[in-house]
Image (cartoon, rainbow, N blue to C red):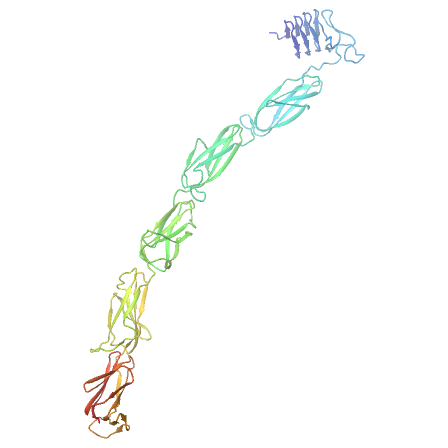
Length: 618
């Protein structure tokens, strides 16, 4: 234990340089030979240097406030003979007349005859410069800075100016000629070294500092599986696996996530997200320095299709404009607006045709059925699709769509037909028709028969079977009539047909023989009437005819018109079908009867007769 001695040198051919020895009993004890002691400060020691050795060189040292600066009982040299420089002795009293920095008289060394021939007048700058490193920044966690760090280097020397400062940043060296300066360091793990050199070339000790800077927020990467929404409008229609990854130069200290307003949870590996709705997912990463980054994304999941129910139609018959009614709702898509479509099938679901697409979910739609084919195997489908693309539909009960009225054709009565009384006084009219409907195959019970009397329609029969109908019109007045046959199908469509005009004629036609007239004589000789008819008095004959005569009949019918006129005489009948009703009669000699009969189109007839006609044919 040499705590009372700075250096004890018991070896030869050594060099002691650049030492600062303070407050020892012996600064340096020199016991051997051929050693060199230079550029040392020996301060406040009892003995600065105590030497028993020989042939040692001692120069360019500072001896300051030692009790005895030097003791030498050997043969040593206390100066540099080549440069003629000795040591600085704080108690040297000599002068420097030529101001060359060397004392004019030697400095005596105690212990013998040794002297410093070149004592220095000024203190030798043997104190190395001092450098101080300080850093300034914002501290984070785990000894990291979370801001750029400013490095301050301050260097000073007790005697002289600083010549320059050498410093390294992460083993890359730089030189600065200022004693104090600063620079800023950004992200990374850094090592700073520096030392300063004064004007005398004294180099200070290297100071070193290590620190870590991380100003960059960690990066967060999140991945979804499926990677892209597998529904529409950014929606997922399945569970979503979430992968989370964070990276930072300082390392990741904490990686968490939370759903909506829930609490933060540690991320321990990918997880499956199943909750339906629109969710806000937050991801948070904190690096080892304490930098924290939060990201969020919106995740929309809807796995459930809408619920659809059809209220109308619910079987039955449909025609014209019909209100389709439904209920459609979705747990996520609250209104389904713009996502309702309605389809029609005429063949029990084999094929479907669009009625309306992309309509709002109002719950009802007025359907103009006239644009669609009639069918007794009709279905309605209401299709709902939510915003995510999930879809569902409902199909109605089968119903009948029928917009087409039955087709009706009247075969009897025909236009222009006249009806009169039969032999029993009845007027029997047969109504015959054909009624057909493409949906209602029989139309039974749905036939109505009416007649038109010139002012209004009157019901003859309703809810009648689809067959012929016979009625007695004997109570009807004479006149012109029409028959209307109406058929109503099960849907309520009504088709009808109206017959042509027909006539009821219960009155016989009027008829009389206008030539010859009773009470006259008609003379026709050689084919010519010689004189006009001559009235006669009381004679036993109704008419006397001499020669030929043109029989003229006057006949008419007020309602149905004449069908024919017949002239009968001598067992012969002469029909005449159109006016004028004239017949040339060349009667044989004798008394004859002349009968005229008029028939109308209703079958009524009336006759007119002249019984006693004397015919003289010459």
